[in-house]
Image 1 (cartoon, rainbow, N blue to C red):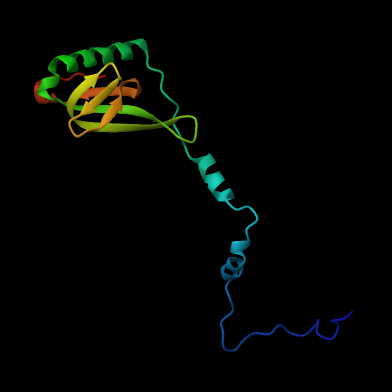
Image 2 (tube, helix red, strand yellow; image 1 turned 120 degrees about the horizontal axis):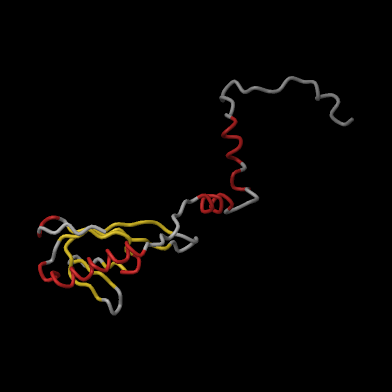
Length: 141
């Protein structure tokens, strides 16, 4: 054996420097990770998305009634609340989003509901629509 003369010597401990913690030792080799990007893949796979809702016939009819009412009273710019589904760009599914504000117009041709602040919501993605009581209406879907 080549190192027989030193194998049983005590380990050197510096009198000037504290010993490096184990986390510091591991950090030295952090840049040499074999699976670069693996953590991002795991994070993306574990990210939760909702499934797109299937609206019942009753729910669709209620939404259509509210759309008709909005077409009639839209010039009064009622305050409304809209809950809609937004598709995820990376995974199958998506998430729910909400918008609140003054109604501007409803374009059934391009199927968009617009607020006075410029916010647009695709009509086909709306799952809930409410009037606020400012006009005496309480249309809820």
